[in-house]
Image 1: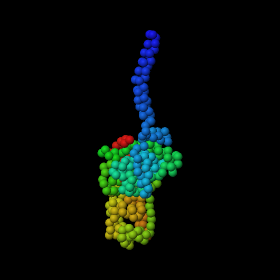
Image 2: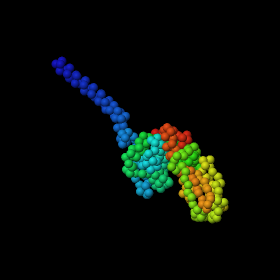
Image 3: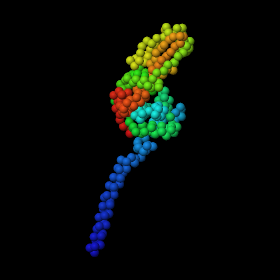
Image 4: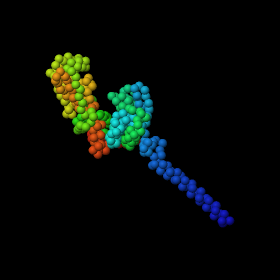
Length: 320
């Protein structure tokens, strides 16, 4: 009798222990799984790293739309905006800038053409479908995007207007000189990328061709370009603020647009019946210089240092 009672007691104690321990084991298992990345809102990259895909983005592609998780969308943006052959740290800087630009669009109501953002680089950001990339290029870009997943450049608690351009040509530009608003984190900094492919360019045309284009763009008749053309003022960056064409004053931005110049940092040379317009830099010159980022990365700077240099006073925060 005593033996049967002892067995019965042992079974009861074992059952009690199981009832107590099983929930603990289950909870502990869930914690370990979460720590190892086994979460419903995380994905695994082709390189094996785990990342959060971020919010869904509605992309306007020339009137047609498609939806993608933000990080997946950024792979196409970085592919279109920066050569995949660039240094890994430059690609990471570009990824954070593009992510920040997108987050600001999401926060401020999206693109004026519809959707959260569009694929027109003149309005928002360019985009190349990732499936069009080679495996090598895609791997390099995914490493940059997913390796910085969720990181956003912030100033005053808000995502910055993270504009970028190809080549500064000496100095980047203060935002109010290229656009409208003076932003404290978009200040001019030195960025002399003399080895960049688009650091300098020039176009030459006859006097008659120059005069015809001036008349078409501004309604101004010139007879002697050398005598009737002059730069009136430049910003500290070297870019043209205003110039005189005959009796008319136009802005450097207006002249750049009319003559399809690489930047507003231009100068003239007249002689032998021709006009040569020489240009330094490529793009509006505000914010991150992509070739400058490449130069800094090759010299040992990481993406955080690159972003902090071109965006004055910012910090990086994880948004997801």
